Length: 222
Ligand code: 5GP
Image 1 (cartoon, rainbow, N blue to C red):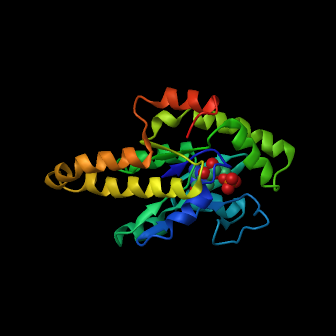
Image 2 (spheres, helix red, strand yellow):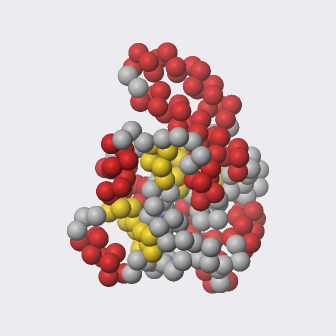
Image 3 (cartoon, rainbow, N blue to C red):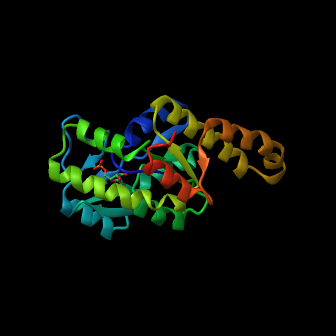
């Protein structure tokens, strides 16, 4: 699962991860209106509230959340089908949704994507040119409350440079396969994997999260 404030570049990261084999990105359903460059069935499935609520009633969602007054949810069926085929499925969802999924799938890996600084986040959200000033303000406010929850995640990846963030996440995925393999194998791989994560620059969050937030606010995250 990949979370992070809107404007951190999660969409671009997911597109980068799709270049690898055996990786799929779950396409969420939402009731929000499509942005100019968004295609139905690619960025999201855009549906109305009635249809969404029907899906909730039928138990068709892995998780869902109401964000900025709109529904967002992960349809269950396609995710389960891909997992059965041995494909790694990436869910790009908000913190609340990620916590719901973790309850159902405790071995899921949680990655939080951070922008390098609050200034850079504002620049990216404003630079999109698709949001009204009111919506920009709402997104920035929500960003702070999401960032405050980075401690609930297994890893934190800073998206300063897109290609590096994609590589970091790929490294995490590889190492997690080894950790989830049987113990003998895990023991064999562990030292090199730990080194690899260190090299990748992805931070294991446990215990470090207050420092991460401090460095973010000071504009010193790299
Ligand atoms: P945006 O409107 O910028 O595309 O997305 C707004 C927020 O909704 C982001 O934080 C994004 O991660 C989250 N989001 C997108 N799809 C889902 C989903 O299926 N479930 C949940 N819980 N959040 C989602």
